Image (cartoon, rainbow, N blue to C red; front, side, top):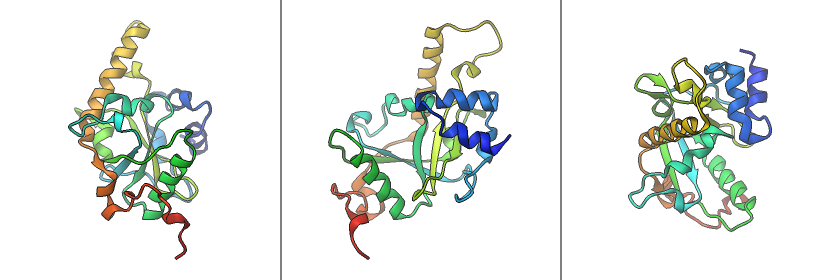
Length: 205
């Protein structure tokens, strides 16, 4: 697997086709997981904990579990996460960028934390890929991207669009079961991200 091709696929445009482009390159496998950015911390290991930041309370059920729609982008442009080893600055920068680039006022609502292995595998089989996608200022950035859903089906005649969508939704449900409950932003790292102004990056010292 040529890592230059992998890195290009992981940032390909349009973003909504990124999962398809990556799947075609890997031919249904996950070879690009072994490729990492030169300035990054390296391949995401199974034991690493990932942090998924949520900005929409409507993505969370009353019991604190995620709605399946919260992970919808895993089949398209991918889900952005930060590895737990990221320092406070990376988390603050992520929140600042997302809130600044949103047309409507947005605030960080909560965070889901889970081991990379928990979303990589289901009943001993691969569920999705976890890729090192280090960014400037956020070297511990990682993306969750699922393979084309047809890979879930045994070899046979082509499946219909409706059947494909049914399988995709079932995969999202399996993924949600693995993520557990979301905890509030104010509970993360002693309230680091609980301040709605998120202006810590602008403060000297």
